[in-house]
Image 1 (cartoon, helix red, strand yellow):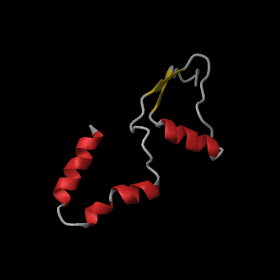
Image 2 (cartoon, helix red, strand yellow):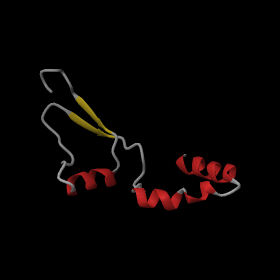
Image 3 (cartoon, helix red, strand yellow):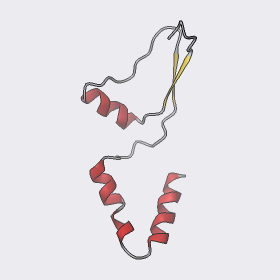
Image 4 (cartoon, helix red, strand yellow):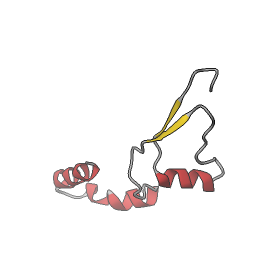
Length: 77
């Protein structure tokens, strides 16, 4: 990385994603001399597992999805 002149790595993962990667044996946070890790997670530390997403978005299959969609969007910001 140093030969390429890379001085910063932007880690977009949430803390939950990092922990799951460590448990699965895919590593966690890696830092090395001359390169700064900038932690800027795209998502919060909410549970985004497939099971939790299914529960969270089950209401999309019902009537009035416009209100549900709006609540979801407002939850992002």
